[in-house]
Length: 113
Image (cartoon, rainbow, N blue to C red):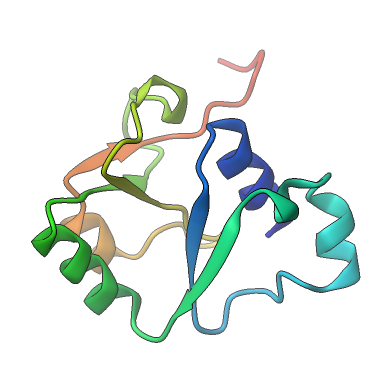
């Protein structure tokens, strides 16, 4: 969760949605790992992520999902009227959400090919 908050902060996102059951963003270890990002990014918990994303799409907000099978970087996107879905390290973004997404992006590892 700390890495996600730092990543959101690095691309100047001002709020994130987290699905129910996501790691506790206020756990002391998470707060420390955010390196202050937790104080700059508003966190909103949603009950049903798929339903929330469909509602965002109805309001003309483009959905981006992280996926390793793309060359488009998270740093190459203008985030006006966009939402980004970042999956967990073990499983990534679910197929249902990938199918719902308008675009796919990845978070490149610096100095890695």
